[in-house]
Length: 354
Image (cartoon, rainbow, N blue to C red; front, side, top):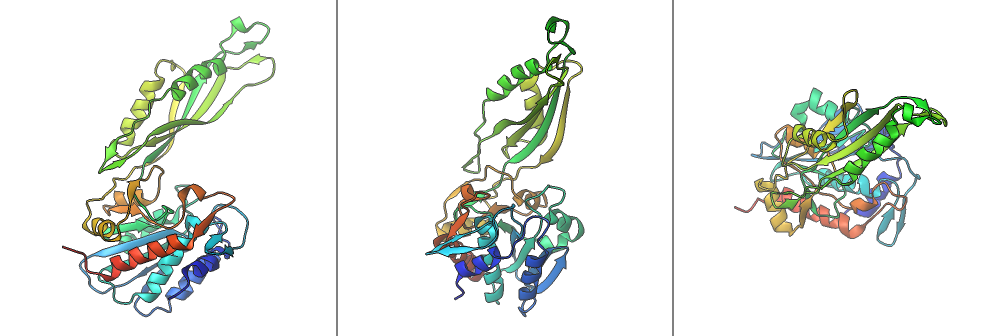
């Protein structure tokens, strides 16, 4: 059997910071085109390989090839791989690549998706381009995203809102502040409301989600002797999948209503939909049961939401500790890679239990 830790190290050793995935995509494409039971398509820097055996159900295994910026190179110490992207998510890609090359007669048809630009903006993510231009390549009955989950099933995902609120005031000389209206002082009252936000912790499909509202950027001020007439805050709101983004936006408006007044602005800059856990899907339920997997909610946003919006039940399942993603000490252990590989091999090669 292929040494999966070594294979993951080979992938980590190929730099693929967002926007620079061409070399890794070409490497993956070259290897998959040598597999006789796969049909391979490449769009941009994304590679899709599929079996076409006429099975009743199809599983999609998808993962992004890009990483955040960081040190280059891979290092193995004992049974641990260190390097940028080791957990997020080249260990998962190594599992997918090995499954694609080694399982010629899966009991379900399988689509392997290696896509670019996930770590950048929502609009630049090439999975969105695939859904827009070749949605037929992404069709399936279940999608699993190889995000680092420590070999847990992290079901669904929370939605995300970025909201910009601008408060107006009136300029004046700081020696005569009573002639003006300090917008930054008004912002202090708004931030107090945000800090006092009472998080919701709804349980959806047996998974507890945990909403959050955080100020992530504040700007304001003109000069050291001027009462500011404008202050702006950017808020990030994480939204559980038991309500719509429209309901969440309305909730933030209500929270801030005691501070807002005529002339202020409230704008939603971008939005990412949440996804239901989908644990009732027979294939996913069978995977959880047979592999004895632990299940929890995905508190962040991932591309499971794109599959869910397309009507494909989806979940996150991959090796690596999610808390180590994007850190200087990013690493992944052999045991986690092997556990994910074993579970997915079982899913693809054993007829689901009735």
